Amino acid sequence: MTLAQVTAIMGTAAEAAEKGTLTFTDILGKIDDAVWGIPLIVLILACGIWLTIRTRGLQVRHLGRALKYMVKNEEGGDGDVTSFGALCTALSATIGTGNIVGVATAITIGGPGALFWMEVAAFFGMATKYAEGLLAIKYRVTDPSGNKLGGPFYYIENGMGKRWKWMAKVFAFLGVCVGLFGIGTFTQINGITSAANNFFNPMFDSPISVELFGNTYSLVTIIAGAVVTICAALVIIGGIKRISSIAQVVVPFMAVIYMLAVLVILICNVTAIPAALAEIVTSAFSFEINELAGGVVGILIAMKSGISRGIFSNEAGLGSAPIASAAAKTNDAVRQGLVTMTGTFIDTIVICTMTGLAVIIGGGWKPELGLEGVAVTTYSFQSCLSFLPSQVPAFILMICLVFFAFTTILGWNYYSERCLAYLAGANPVITKLFRWIYILAVAIGPYMTVSAVWTIANIFNGLMAIPNIIALLALSGVVAAETKAFNQRLKEKKKALG
Image (cartoon, rainbow, N blue to C red; front, side):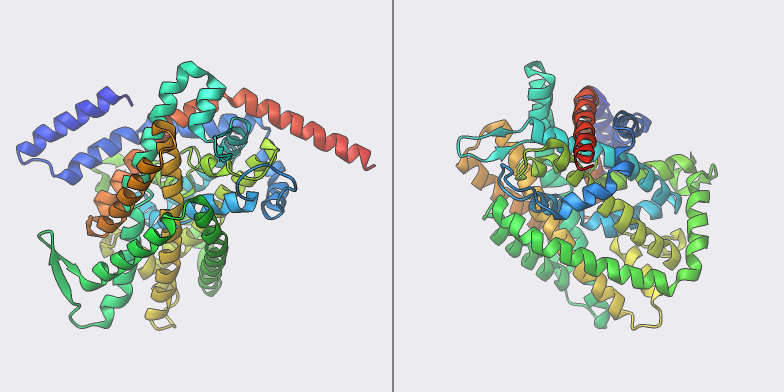
């Protein structure tokens, strides 16, 4: 979709809004529908399929090797943080509300079939993520301070050529917007405060409310928002090394805790899993009319919800992960590409699948309940673990969501800063000012509506993906050549060992 199309849509929507026929949410919805139309969905899937073909199914053949590289850092590699540290920084930005709230939202909108399309997109997205990590190392640069810098803006400029620098700048600008208004701030802090409300408010007969900005908010929302904002500020001021050190501890620990909790849910409801899987596949190819979507064919809604929320969660094709990958201590682009690829596997194939099954089995997604956001997941977890006090699953979910979302706030601050540095140069004054603006965005996130928050995030995600996907397709020959050379080295090494 072109800028002219977006402008036209906004103009038409604005005129309608003036006449009182459209709300701000309606305007956002129309822009979202235009951005996440069939062309973008096809482009993202086609990129993953094409890279899968060109790398000969690398995400299947080398998954075991990738998982091994993930936990075994390369010795003597050149960079700022370890490969595992770079992966954890990337995972800190991907494992967040998308895994808990995003999956629930996708299923609520698109039905159980949305999970199927999320998995399809993730499978091909692993090849996309591999290419992103590989190109990040191959085309990274070293700044005057000795720091390694890389990402889509550098492989667009250095890989595609200087005449494409304008597209690199477009990507960098959108990257700043995604951090400030999309994945990095509003959705994460909104998810945290929603989870806190779902846990604490039921404990009181009359939860304390405070009037702010002309609206009424619970005291829990205000306190939780303030605490998270302060904690985020303390870490963000420290930069990439502090973010990486925090991520290496928090991300693996909370990921394991969350997966164990969901595994318990699935084991306790193991007899319901076959029916849930059947419902997922059936719904994915359903051509029934979706009444909530205004008569749009159901399969299209499932595809759009699954793919867009899947990208929100694992960020394959978005171009964010290679920004972190470029800082890894490695001299092997293919090796780092494989490590980067594991992020999509862990995020979507493992965590999102487990969450999706729990949501479908628990039934919180059903339209008649009228739930949205984290409330869908909370209801489903409580339903699946009905033999426990309702506060137990709600507490576990709240704690996991708080830490997942918190690390995502940190990771996306780093991404946004790197994008800003590409646009404005490594100016310490600008960087410091941006950090405070970012922190301010975190502070106001709790006071935005859930639907508006997720729609804004979707719009910026889609726009950011376009220049990156174009670059990946243009440089797919480089990815194929590097992969072929890597496979040849493995054969020679195996032959030498006898």
